[in-house]
Image (tube, rainbow, N blue to C red):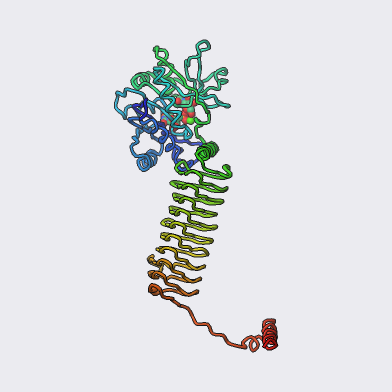
Length: 482
Ligand code: UD1
Ligand code: CA
């Protein structure tokens, strides 16, 4: 539990985000497996607030649906018209009921790099210094567009935040900017918001005006400078979206590496924030690890691999593969060039080899499907071997059917298992068989045409051909040798 537990965190996410040029609302754009607002909500939750309120407006139904589905426990407040950040916070406080006592933290929904640690540090500074408001600021290389932090030239205290559009030449030269993140005393915030005016260049209620109002009333106004200005990067267009994705990806990989994961070429690896690594796992170049993917100790994945919601067991090897909602057992081997679709479960030391596709298939311990095969809707026992170029024929054009193959089976190359069908333990099947009937345990099933050799056919039907000459030479040689 956080020592400085806020009464509420308010996330501002009502704006449209026109510069994204998208049908998707800005805050629902994804980086590293979470929406922009999802990253902010995740960071905010680290503060363990009593209430978490997201102010929504543009595409409200869509944003509310996303929050309800993915971030249960968040509340929403509806801001019909975007009359400014101060107005948005006022609506959030009304949603909570008039008297919010304790700390209220305000963040923007489009700053996905903001960390829970930075928010926690801000809340701590706010409490320790006994401030009425504490603003998170940052020194940025280019302050264009941001609100400027104006400080008293003698004491260095923050006196005001001036929006870019309202700033003088001198003020525009200031490189310390408002990140849009604040901690407030809830009661003083409520009172001050009632006094915010709209006589500015945008005709909006600015949240930033609360600082000046509180200061003039004699309250303590503090500022906390972010250690890394990149954390407060706000996303307004897709160039910034890509920039944020790159920064977050690098941060996630750095954390993994420091925890004992080898990432051979971080620049070519993409990882979601939800991926879990165990120490001594190895990630080769060109790999995407997405969703709830998990690499156990010593698992080695890549190069050129995409894993979505896939669990890779300890010491397993996945090479040039695509897997979606698959479970790969300890010491199992996948690829090169394999596709594991949802519901694939590879047992301990099992193998899905080269040009192998699997779907809804449970493969037992030590069982191998080494080459050029499709295994769909199947259960295979332990220590069986499936011959090259086999197909589990699961679809009759209307419904899917299941194939069961036992343990210690050896099925021949180029088999078709026409489901529903069962092959018993220890059974063999001949190469080229189309298995349509159950095979009892321990038997050999042969299901193919008989071979017929028509002697002398080439000499009679293709006289004078190279084939006929080669055949004649072979027969001469055989008669000399005999
Ligand atoms: C705001 C700050 C500025 C700061 C910058 C940091 C104000 C007046 N200005 O400017 O000092 O440097 O953020 O990125 O606070 N929103 C609503 N409802 C509204 C208006 C905005 O929910 O009526 C939301 C937006 O969706 C967005 C956030 O508030 O998530 C910030 O709004 P935006 O219009 O982007 O403010 P900036 O001009 O960037
Ligand atoms: Ca903004």
